[in-house]
Structures are given as structure tokens and as C-alpha cells.
Image 1 (cartoon, rainbow, N blue to C red):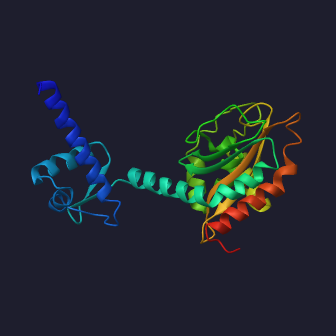
Image 2 (image 1 turned 120 degrees about the vertical axis):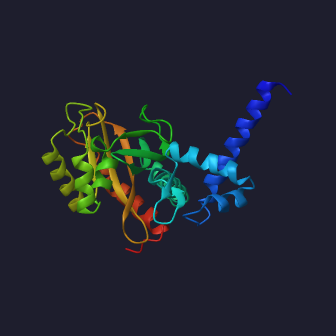
Image 3 (image 1 turned 45 degrees about the vertical axis):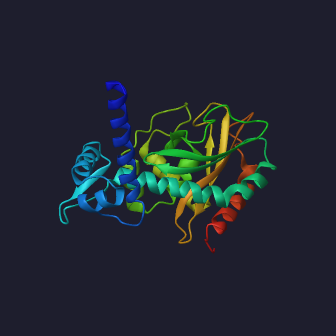
Length: 259
């Protein structure tokens, strides 16, 4: 074995051990020590110690001063929660989305909030598919989308204010809301009417409608939307409001929400 392949093998071994250590935190144990992790992963304590502190330096693990143990950072916990949410949504939304696709030539999205962006976790294309954000995993600024507006509108007031205060309401088109006072008024209107609209605010000539998806406790965790090219953005997609809301209700029901 050459020196290069030997070093490469050692690096791959360390990466594999690091991955196993991170996976241990997904087995319902939130905090663990070096010795415990070394036993579970099957490496020496010194090796575990080195890998754990590398993960700390990279912002994946953190040491809890009160216990002296290690846990996933908030970023890693958020990623895990996002992945779990996406899987649950996929299972609950497959049939309702397929039914909604029969009612429109546009593009359907399921989205969740990721910071001040929306993250698209599911997609269906019709004949009039929007040629942007084609891949699942794409994102867009929440303030310029119906998906983002409807999720933000139903957040607890304190969290909503914190997020909006930290937003840069950059214009995507001349129609994008760039005033925070106007945006807060828009969120209030969305919450009262139960759906959100995007009338040429993210792409010229494109409109969308979104409705909230709720978890078993009634908290809004995602949105379902339809987007289409239109002749007049002023007219919007009002004819799709009812089908989108009904789809959101079916998905919410599949997730366990009893309205």
C-alpha cells in the first residue's frame, strides 16, 4: 500500500467514525460523553476524543458546560427536524398533490420555512410549469413568495416579529413588498383570510396562491402552493384559492390535525 493510499484510508476511516458518532445522537440520546461514544462507535477513547473535538470546531457538536457532555448544535438539530418534517410531508401530501395537479396547469410546491427563506421540499409540474426552482431543495426569499407569507403569517407573534425584523426585504420585481410596515400589514391580512397571494412579486408575470399546512397541534409547519404564468398579475389566481385551501386541509388531516 502506498503512503498516499494509507493516508487516504485513515482519513476515510475518520470520516466514517465521525458519521457514526453523529448518528448516535439521532437515537434518542441527546447528550453523551467521550467514553460512551467511543464504546458505541467502537473506536478508542483517544480517537473518539479527537473526532469529537473536530466536530465541535466545525460547529456540529457542542459541549454542555453543566453536564460536561456533548450534544448536537442547534444547526444540526434544525437540519434533522427539517429532514423529518420533509419526510412526513411527503407521505401525507402525495395523494392530495396528485389530485390538485389535475385542477391546474401550473407548478405545485410544498415548502417549509428555513430562516428567512422558504425551502421547497416537494414539487409537481403541470404543462405550464414555472422554469425556476425546478429541483426540490431550492429556496427563495420568504417575503417575495405566497408560501413564505402564509407560513410567516401564522407564526407566534414574537417569533414572527423577530424574523421580520431580521429580514432584508430586497426587491425581486417592482411589485415586491420592501416596507416592513407594509409587510406586517400583509401578514395580518393573510392570517385573517387564511391564504396568501403572490402577484408578480418574485417573478414578473407569475402569480401564486398558498395555504397553510398544520401539524396535529394545529401549528402551521408548511405550505402548499400553486404558481402559474398569467396575463394579468392584478387578477391573480383567485380561481385556485379554494382548491389550494382544500388540499392544505387534506394534508393537515393526514398529518393528524383534527379541525
